[in-house]
Image (cartoon, rainbow, N blue to C red; front, side, top):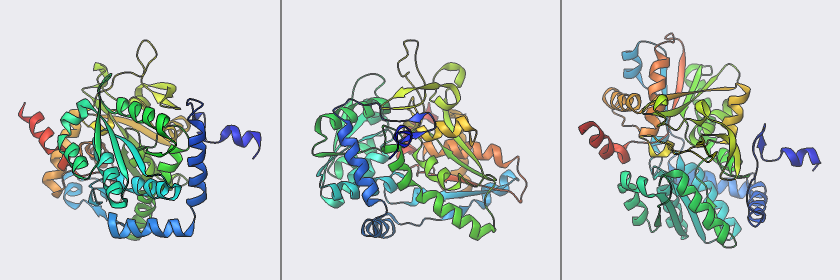
Length: 396
């Protein structure tokens, strides 16, 4: 490998890299070697495909939301139904790949972080399936608003540890998980849940989540005889979005739109939209767009959707923004709640609050399109976990 290749390894333009303590780099190198060894290994691929089909339930439908489309009177809205996966979200796609990798590496202990709880549930599920010890770090605030998912993880045999520092949300959960991994990497596999973190994690997560876009692309071609005009997904760390976007990257006619949480309004400062209102910086061992405070530290963030409540974003999304390949917009809590209700009433599908952000922007966009045009929204998760929270929010 040439020096130029070494310098570019793990980077998307100027974003990405591995900014970690020296003691942790050998473990990341070992992980990268294992991933490169097994990602195309026929036996590994066959086993992954088996669990995708027989356990996760793939491939899942690309569903034309006829009633919603009719009500809006514009372009066709297709939903990529990741909510139908076992455990209720896209997270299991990545978890299954990483846990099978942990098995190949002979590691018996797994740690993970979670925000909304879906990644934690997926990790606990896979660890139960394969008999691995599982520790999940979760912000104390998120544990309160996603109490049902905490119980699910514990029911599956995981130990859920509260992150009690700072804002007590996803950032602090990642901090704790990384500290655990740095201490115990000799016998521990860190299943990182989003397309963030030091190299090779963004590449690993994209690889296992790209099944979303690969399926959606082929399904749309079969249904419409052409590619969609737009693909839309919510963006926190960005794994569901990069999973949808990456297989369309070379299709320049397909516009890609990532939807960040504007929270209570960008002007209030209570949001989590680093691509729209952040600047390049380093967080959790990688370079990306990040929201910072006056001291230059990662800022406190806010979103009604715990899975989007993160001050950074995946390095590949940062690169897509910089080169103009994708457009990133933001949607408020109120707009997401309106979309949550509308999809439920028109299609009988209750979306996760995270996914409702993407639905909200798709509703705005579809009205501007002709009936011949179409868009795909990644319905990244189902809303069972959020019904109690939404009930309380609306009741107030």
